[in-house]
Length: 73
Image (cartoon, rainbow, N blue to C red; front, side, top):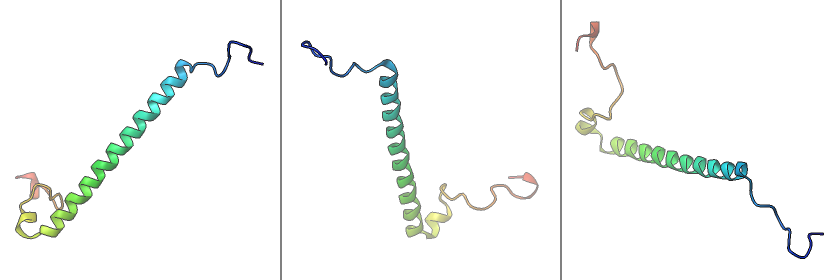
């Protein structure tokens, strides 16, 4: 019996508060990572759609070797 003056649930401990904060930070991190991945996919689709000379001279193009033979640029 909890008595006249209450005695409901005990207040959350520091460990519980820390766990809740860590969980909320992890959720925020996951949503921001998902957002950046979606933006990257959209950028790649846009580059593929425009194509042509824009893609040829684009700094976003990362395929192929970056250096010539013997490492001379």
